[in-house]
Image (cartoon, rainbow, N blue to C red; front, side, top):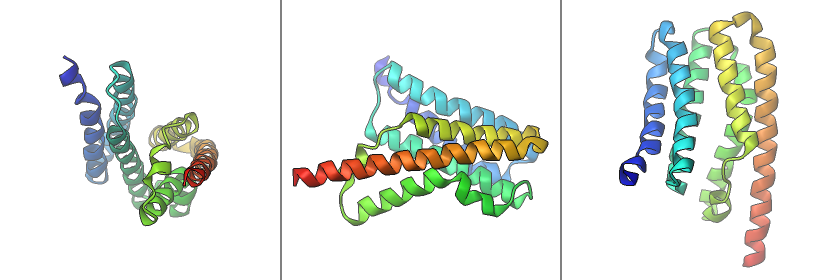
Length: 178
C-alpha cells in the first residue's frame, strides 16, 4: 500500500501542471471548477505526503512548480480576458518572483544547499491561499476584487520577505561551514 501511496502526491502535483496548461484554453464556465480542483489537489498532495511520510525534496519541488505554474497561467488568463490589469501581476507574484530569483541565483553559483533548505512555510501557504481567494473572488464576485487583491498582495509580499530572510540566513550558515 505504501508503495502505491508514495506516487499519489506527485500525481496530484502533475495533475495541477496539466490543469495550469489547460486553463488558458478552458471556457470561462470551467474556470471555477479548475480553481477548486487545483486548490483541493494542492491541499491533498501535501496532506497525503505528510500523513504517509512520503515527502521528498523532489516532490516538494514538483508541488511548487505545479503551484507556481497554475497561479501564473490563471493570472495571465485573467489579464488576457480583461478581468484584471497586467500591472497587478508583480504584486500578486512577489513571493513567486523572489523564490524564482533565489533559485536562479543558487543555480548560477552552484549552491543548491541553501535553496534546498527553504521548506514550505506558513507565510507561503497563506500567500497561496490569498492567491486562490483572489481567483475565486475574480470569478465569483468581481465587485469584491480590490479587497481580495489587497489581501493577496499583502500575503505575497510578506511571504517574499520571509523567504528572502530565510535564504539569507541559510547562506550565512553555508558560508560559516566553508
